[in-house]
Length: 437
Image (cartoon, rainbow, N blue to C red; front, side, top):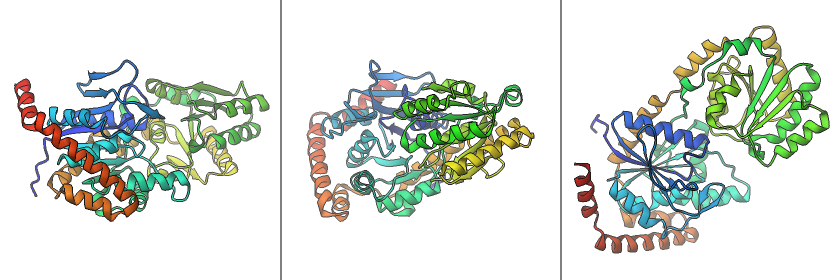
């Protein structure tokens, strides 16, 4: 194998991207920026957001295709295969894409792109950002329909933690040798401490996240009144929105905590640092989490983190100095918060600037991009299955859904052949080459 890496032409594909805000969106944006700095050619493919349609260039020079696909549920597009195939094929050929990198198990567009691109002979990589169970109906359906069949023919797979890797391998019945672990990162220069507020503000506990069951909003509703009843001055700031916000507001009304708990609602990403700088302790109540970028952002701002011991969270930060971990039990989390408050009042928490410097060395996007391009090299140099082998791969997973995937793949192959007759890949490459010159 050659030691030289790239440059490659890469398409990052997901239903979740700017202007939407979230962990996957942030990951794709900064990964793309660092890959461009490494010399690769990168485009992002996503669905349209309101009036944001067509081709756009972001301020960092990143080219984004906002394709006119129908959004079905929670930001994910309606899977149509035939409807999206001509669009995706045209973009792949127009940009001379070599590697398709799909993001998020929840993204139908990512899985469609991997299937269509693979049948076009392009190399495919997938990053899984989530953890799922094995017992409930939605998890079984997701594991079988999405992971087990969609990823069987993907060249390389990336997970954001070792726990996530084990989870993905088991759920998708995948070869662990083609699954790698590369953690998330943050732009630490955007998350810096404010020592004046850290030391002079009253003791403040911050929560930032979606107010949904999976993020532990029910735990938060139970924890806040217990902490407030046992400590006379501690206050809470809650950022985020969701269906559980009503229950949170009812709790404030019931215990008369409006003067000690501030609910900010949904925050734009550029306001997160401002909110984090107002506190000294960050609480994460997630019930499942593959990595959790919010606790890294909080630690980078100098806050001590108290978190549930779930998923990949124990891998993220050093225990005790940076983070206190407890089981997702309200009383245990209350005790952990009160101990952290006591440490803060005695001046025993780590200096915010020292913590920020340590986090900056642990997590940075250039390192993530360099490790990701090694995965691209593996994908390019590995033996990718041909069309017949891909059909066999679906069949080997089980005759039920296997037949469904084989039928869909045959339809895609048929239409790819028809389109190639009238709009040949060679002609597209020639047009793009003339345009670049």
